[in-house]
Length: 195
Image 1 (cartoon, rainbow, N blue to C red):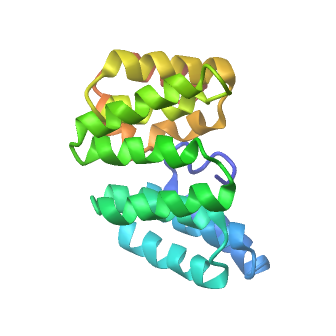
Image 2: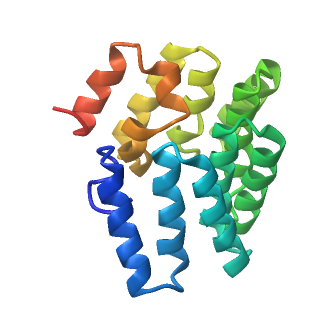
Image 3: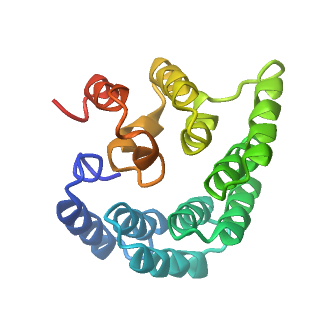
């Protein structure tokens, strides 16, 4: 999120950078949320959740805090809480696609395969009428063990120049599901996250 430290998994540096930014502007919702984000990426979920809950207290209508809390709850396998936070994020961001795509990830992670696939099919149907980002698919497919589909959509994200790819190396949800596939390090090299 800040410089190249977090995407390159240099979490101590990234945490130092975001904490310094927060010191300079302690009321910045973004800098406070970035502290939580770096902690999550570093595997410090409980600390990250505490930071993000503080951001929600500062402004309950700040979408990014709810998005990151949902991500944290996913990592902690707190699926009802993750669904609630993703729903709140989608509402606050005014993004009806997000209210579908993120729950698909939660259902996939929770082992509710049929529900995840139903949502993915609905997203594909909607994509015939409106733009749906390629980022709506790979996480759920990866968690379902559908690696070919996950990489198909990751390749589409690369073609879209989707900014979510910058976090792929440190992603704590998708990377474990697809990390052993030889296409994963090849994609990281293509993105420029590894040499």
